[in-house]
Length: 247
Image (cartoon, rainbow, N blue to C red):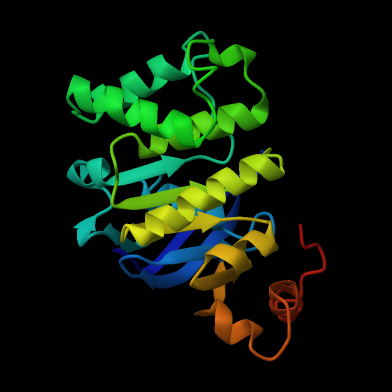
């Protein structure tokens, strides 16, 4: 469902335009119905990878595809849901209006939008606030509204950048339940997170990226089989890369 082949990406940084290698030869495949956790320190290349997948930026070399279609092909976008790390919306819209906009932009019929809106806002405990403008929402409520928007068109592939950011324990449980529900429906979920306990609970496999290089990919149950925690594995990979600053 997701395939990345030898992707590299550089950025220019600061007034000196120094080149920074964000990704180096990244290759990764994620199958249908899989929940894949993407881990790494700040600046490791997680968000860069996600932005390449959703065609916000372009790789310098290599390729990325979703469902066998090049990530740059606009036809694939109706099959992909995306939640950015810090969602920001026109804050005079209500949650209901936000989902209406997303549904119409995705080509959904009006009746389907109403049905999906009712379903998603119910699951994310936003029904009572559906007619309130987003500017009155807490950070966690905005995060949940953003997830509803990502799912309004019932995508086959869901890409989430730090989906638990700003959520309280109840909100994290709601989002976790939805991730497991998507898995049960055979959907593919790719998400980055700093909350390792959530990755342990929800993911089939994890990839650890440090310094723009993919250092490890394995099943979660394999990594935990010998009594180690995911934090232990993560810190070991960071140490191997010679980094001291983790988060």
